[in-house]
Amino acid sequence: MTSAPVIVWFRRDLRLHDHLPLHNAMQTGLPIIPLFIFDPAILNSKRISHARLEFMLGAIQALRDDLQAVGGNLLIQHGNPADILGDIITKTGATALFYGIDYTPYARQRDEALSQSLNIAIHLSHDRLLVPPHTIATDAGKPYTVFTPFKNKWRKLEKLPCVDISLSPQHFFDTSQFPSARFPEIRVHDVEIPLATSTEGQNRLTNFMHRAIYAYADGRNMLGNPHNNPKTQTSFLSPYIRFGLVSTREIYWASRLAYEATPSTEKHDSVGVFVDEIIWHEFYTHILWHFPHVKTGSFNQKFDAMRWADDQEAFLAWCEGRTGYPVVDASMRQLVTTGWMHNRARMIVASFLTKDLLIDWRLGEQFFMQHLLDGDTAANNGGWQWSAGTGTDAQPFFRIFNPVTQSEKFDPSGDFIRHWLPELADVPDKYIHAPHTMSNPPKGYPAPIVEHDIARKIALEAHAQLKKEDTQ
Image (tube, rainbow, N blue to C red):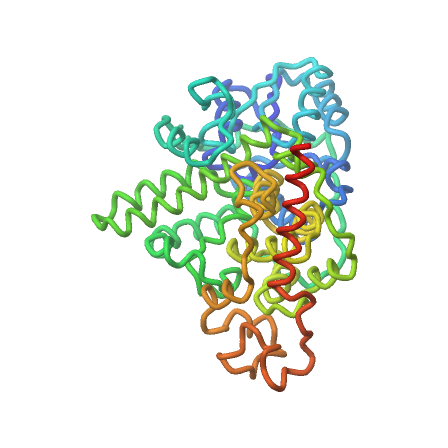
């Protein structure tokens, strides 16, 4: 008689290597049911990106292929997770459920409800974070709300090593009694989706650690197109992190090896800058965990009273990349075309929307989630609130990026602009960052929808008024 199984619920961890829930399930010695559930609440969300969904579907297919290669299979179901899990538990007599913790408010509410409704032992793992919430705090026992002291404490804490996993057919339970659900249908779109496999994620990680990480400190801000034609020192690992095709532990320990592989102080510093990006992601995840109100409102709640402009035409121009500021427009077209945007570009376009156009950061945050391959609630929310000046450890509202000088600094040759704005292909370098200043501006490209200096003054006045009202 076959032993009662245990269930490993794959969620944002679509890999078979360095997988804590899977590793812990294997320690029971019981047969495993690998499971993925398409949750309608997520599939029907207004924040879903069709590009991100397609990338996820590719990753699920790759995970199923990887499981079949070692004698298992991925059971794919569609429906309410509590109902699906309850049915499987009833029909198989499963004795335990293993899964990795997700940190969004929706996931926390869903998982808490599961724990109340399922008659089964549930084993949770902090598989996505190197330093989980509640394991790091100030001397007063409070969560950190400023990045630098969080980073300093984070660096001192012990990090879990990667776990080895070796699977064979005897590790798996026969799930043939459960027909697998069909994959969701995706509307046709033109985004070129990168290969969504854990092998591709590992290859990108290896290639980055061998070369680009050592130039990351200087090169990370230079605008380029690493999605399909690497020209910058960015890793393009974020979509693979988003769906757990590579783990943060693997990235962290690979960074440590890269650090130890060179005696160069300059290269050591560059590796450190890259690790800081891992820490930023963890910091924003901790903020979302401790302060879930940031999901829909400003961390600095006085900004919930900010009088944002209700300018649908300006917002649409920003979305479609026709603001008249080339670096903004090129970045937005990169996002819509590829599902990805360079981090420096994200800061530039977010500053422009929230300060030059004085449009609510939440509109931009949602637009990003509707298009990004790597859309992660905590990181996206944290980045937008930083740029808008409304968040924890944010760039002050009175610091407003000048889109022309940002363009001149981070795309000095204009190659990034010309790639995404072919209508500016013949504009001389002298004018590529501000073509409206030419005596005969290029036809087919709009004039700036706002004058930056004037918009900056209006934004500062709005902020001053908010401060005045906050003190009354």
